[in-house]
Amino acid sequence: MELQVNGVKRTAKATPETSLLSVLRDEFDLTGTKYGCGEGQCGACTVLLDGKAVRSCRTPISSLSGKEIITVEGLEKNGRLHPVQEAYLKVDVFQCGYCASGMVLSTVALLKNNPHPTQEQIIDFMNGNICRCGTYPRILQAIQEAAS
Ligand code: FES
Image (cartoon, rainbow, N blue to C red; front, side, top):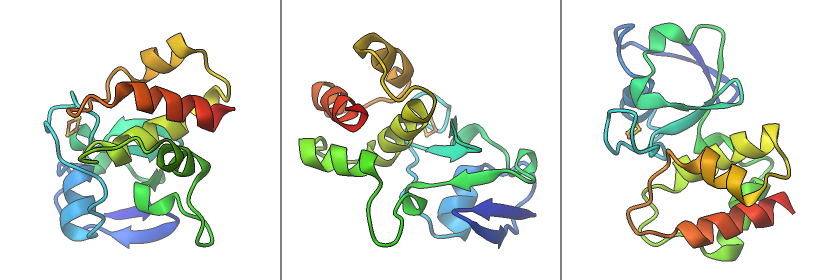
């Protein structure tokens, strides 16, 4: 099955019901996308699908024909990090960093549709992304920084 990942056509050998998360990590070696719960509950596996944040652990590759998949590895352009990544670094958000790629990609999706969200809108949108280190105040700060 052919997939469009970070602007490149890739061929997955896995069966159609295999999760996008497994294919990204095990076949394409794109390990920035993390396995957390495997049940759509934590957001660690978030990627962008045609610009929308989706849980790759719950997304079978059979549903992805013709869609553009962006992982955290695809955010950098011409050697420069995405402004959302820059904002997260500036605020020094992360501790263990396991939730980082999912948080960043969810933030990219949020700001694409709503460039200047209110605090309430940020919290509402990011509610499905879990940080077990509890860095939520800094995540909020970084998103506000990226939106400013
Ligand atoms: Fe996909 Fe937790 S690993 S939501």
